[in-house]
Amino acid sequence: MSDVVEPQPQPVRVLIADDQTLVRAGFRMVVEARDDLRVVGEAADGAQAVALAAQHRPDVVLMDVRMPVMDGIEATRRIIGAPAAEQHRPHVLILTTFDLDQYVYEALRAGASGFLLKDTPPQDLVAAIRTVAAGEALLAPSVTRRLIERFVGLPAPRPAPARNEVLADLTPREADVLRLIARGLSNREIAEQLVVSTTTVKSHVARLLMKLGLHDRTQAVVLAYETGFVTPGA
Image (cartoon, rainbow, N blue to C red; front, side):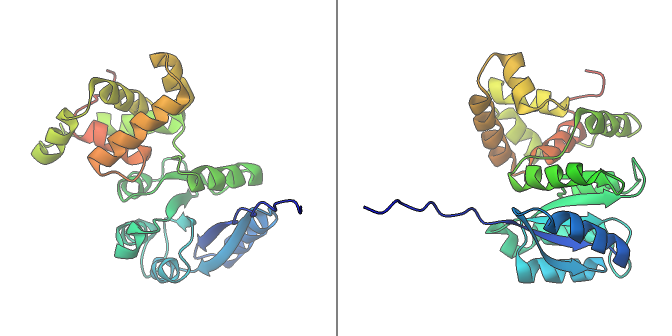
């Protein structure tokens, strides 16, 4: 009897969007040096990124913020919100030259799964692509702290009755998980806090995201503070 050959996993499909040719070339070299990653297209502006995302259906989009024709924020909003994305929703990683770029917050609200600095070491870029492709958000505690600092300077959140009603429907354990997500804790750290398994935490995260109609835990952090469910310093 012949041995059963296990099917090989498909490589992660990556779309690169940046208005600088050399930057795109650099990212392409890093990505294509890995067997499990493949570049499916390059876009020089946000409009091209939207069109190529619809055409190639990438798993991950590396998205520059400041581009001509259409910026990365609007491109992210359109890619995440496209009808076709319901069946195959890409994960968007925002690329920025400056830490705490003024546009990063809006990009996260638009549905991005996280952000990276353009001088990120190649191995960290590769790890980030793999992380978001697997459905995890790239939102380290340090990034969460900066988001919280942003909320400290904002007016009190406006009431959002519909969303607040859904928040009220969360189970006590789901609410606990959301609060810990908003503090920037990973699934492993949440599991340690609640004395449960990481598998249980993943189930809670998946359910609360579904209830709230959110794309990933990055949006959960934003929602938690915008609605006042969690307050800075709490």
